[in-house]
Image (cartoon, rainbow, N blue to C red; front, side, top):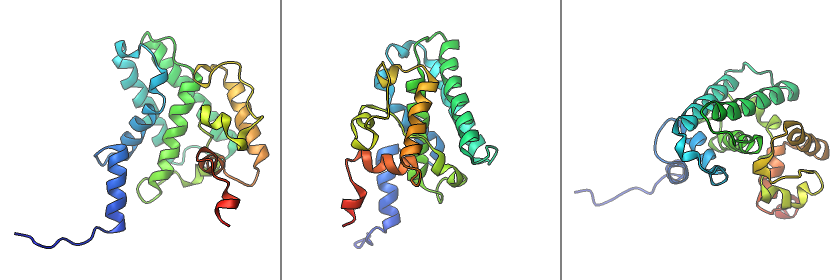
Length: 204
C-alpha cells in the first residue's frame, strides 16, 4: 500500500483547475467551445426544441477556429475582422436554418470572443497556432464590460447586448476600443477591466 504521495507539481495543479472549469477531456477546442457557449446560453430562450441547431453551430465554430489556427487568415485587423464577421453571421444562419429565428449577432460574438479568450487561457503550449491573432481579438461584450470605466462612452447600442443584430454597430465599438488603446491588445484591456483592476495601481 502506498503510504507516501508526492506534492502535486504546479503543472498538475493547473491541469486540475482547468478540468474543474472546462471539464474532463483532451479535446481542448471542444472544451472551450462548449464552455464559451455557457457564457451566453442563459440569453438563448426556447432553444431546447432545436438540438440540431446547437450541434451544427458547434461544428461551424470549431471548423473556423481550426481554419484560423492553420494560418489561413492573414494576421491583420482587416482580415481577422472579416473572418469574425463571417463566422458570427454563419452562426446566426445556422440557427435560422434549423428553425430557431432569434439567435443574434450579440450572442454569436459572445460565443466566438469567449472561445478565443479561452484559447489564450489555455496558452500556446496546449493550443498552438493562435498566437499571431491575440492582438487582433475582440472584446467580448456584455453588461460587465459596458459598466467598466475602461469602456465608458464607447458603446451606443439601443438594445441589450444579447439582442444586438447590427454587426456594424458591434464593430464600431471594437474599433473605438482599438483607437482608445492603440498600444494594448483589446483582450488585455478586457482582462483587467472585467476584474475591476487598474493595472497601473495593481503593479505599484
